[in-house]
Length: 199
Image 1 (cartoon, rainbow, N blue to C red):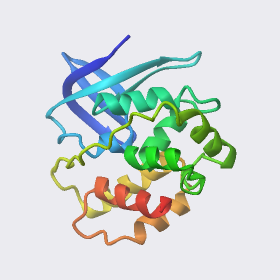
Image 2 (image 1 turned 30 degrees about the vertical axis):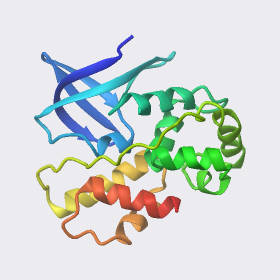
Image 3 (image 1 turned 135 degrees about the vertical axis):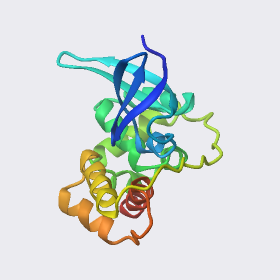
Image 4 (image 1 turned 90 degrees about the vertical axis):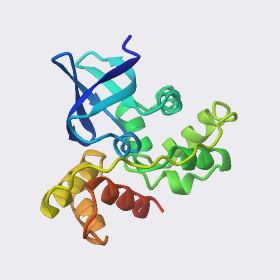
């Protein structure tokens, strides 16, 4: 079991990142909530991880804190929710907002997430409610500020990330174009687009 990684952040292309540890590059899948808080490329990063072995792949998922990893572990225990959907859920909605939806039985907000239909939303609420009784809201973390790439690269990266999360290319493009993109990072655009698409 790989429980934690610490190394140099080599690549960042949502939802995948590459972490170099003594010359060995680890490909890690991270939710957007973790991506927002990553340091600039070339700096040290530390992640709590969940290693999942399937018949056709070995996947490593990374999280900025242990509570996010635990939420991921709880999500994949829900009937019909695999690692990819769990990652999408955690990317499309803040953890505290997700917990609120579960505790209040808010299926309307959950079905706005890509890949979550009414039945899945109802299952999430039913199966997660008891597990999240002790959840305490966290203090908001500030995303790290990285060097600013070109405006076109920022837009392309933001759209690609939304598509990787399950949105259609047209939806992703429309969501990004509806924002004030001037001077924004791709992480900020992704965050704003997801907030608008879920709200």
